Image 1 (cartoon, helix red, strand yellow):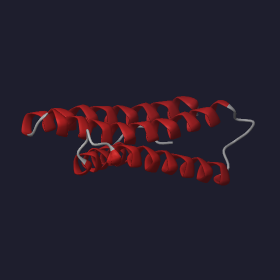
Image 2 (tube, one colour; image 1 turned 30 degrees about the horizontal axis):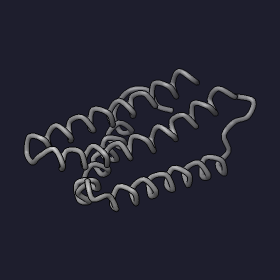
Image 3 (cartoon, one colour; image 1 turned 45 degrees about the vertical axis):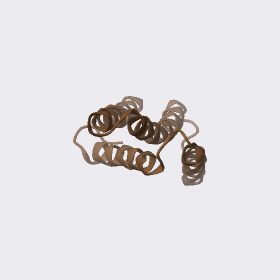
Length: 124
């Protein structure tokens, strides 16, 4: 079970990391460094949130005697949502970042997440 969870989690994080690099590189090529930095921050917010949930799932897979309950998964999802909203609030208030580019980066990160979930390979 752990190897399936770990493979799925690593595949999702890999897709998001590749998306972060690709979106940032495209932003530099099309616009400038400020936009690219903003896109990178938005993608990083998505990557951080997914990493949190990934580590929670791996932690639950390591303890088969204490399986994850629906309530604990929902609670961790709320923590992930609070993490995203908090980081997004900080990023959007920063004068060094461009808010639409931050949102674009976060959207790209979530798109990479869902593409990884829909892709082939092992399933949880």
